[in-house]
Length: 97
Image (tube, rainbow, N blue to C red; front, side, top):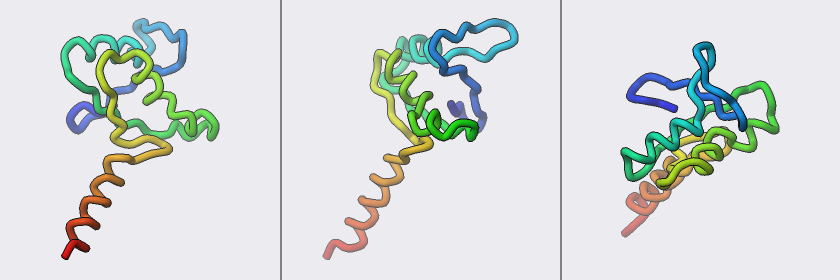
């Protein structure tokens, strides 16, 4: 997850436990952030270790599962929906007569 220009490493696997040597879990992050915001925008990147895992969008899926507010997919291994929306709006603007 990106915070400003930095990246926040989160453990997304089910049953992961946060301790001193492991990163926070996306479950905990989604639950805490849900208390403070109206929506959560997540940009995740493929782990590049398992094609099947990357294609399942595990980070986005984890946030959706545990968040109490809408989760916006800013970019994942599979999708870049906000870019697609921006492209469609540009085409409409440029091609409109």
